[in-house]
Length: 279
Ligand code: MG
Image 1 (cartoon, rainbow, N blue to C red):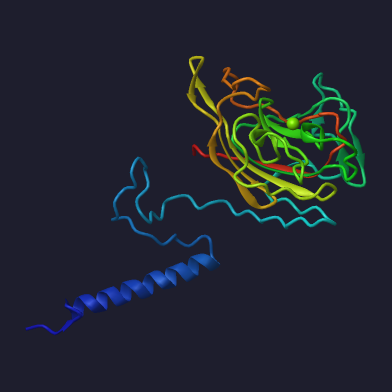
Image 2 (image 1 turned 135 degrees about the vertical axis):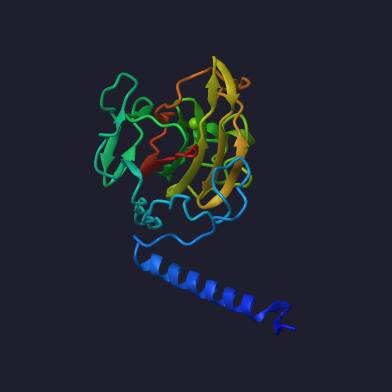
């Protein structure tokens, strides 16, 4: 009778040990040298609806991206290495007004102040991760509700993520900062006081249309000041005021826009990462 370790033959146990050592060595080598074969398994089941196997070594390696650095009140952060920078504090070259001209918004001290008319990114986008920093005016005057610190970030020129001074400033819940305007209040009110810099991080999945009909709606996941305020929210259609949102077919990409709502809000550090989710 053959000797057995943990219920398997010595011969088999040794084979497992060598295999484990070999894959550990191969893994270390690949970390040091990208030309080495990628460790993995080719005898595993296929993932459902997928051409890749579980632990498939042929599955493409994700591109390397250097992460950015966080923002503070004093200083904007740095975008990740693969972001398209829409405003880095220097100029409005990435933006236009409705007619394609340079918009009359002021750039000063690395900040962009809302001027006359909504502005639009010159480049157009579909699915994105978007980072925007904003600051509503310290002097709130006698303004209340929607008149205090109002602006907004629109995706595809249609879907508004509300900007408002929502610090001790009651308004209808689906109109406060962090809201998908007229559709979803934020999960929590994570607003900072007026005069402090705030961050919006938005993951937006564009709607799909086919033969002039909605194939799949838009979705959004949103962080305000690092706090989750929207989780995979199904967008009901183009933003409306006092009306129910509905979809109108539109091209697969569109501009990102910043709203002029008559308040001199400021912006800084705006960047976007187009997402290739279907590859
Ligand atoms: Mg607004």
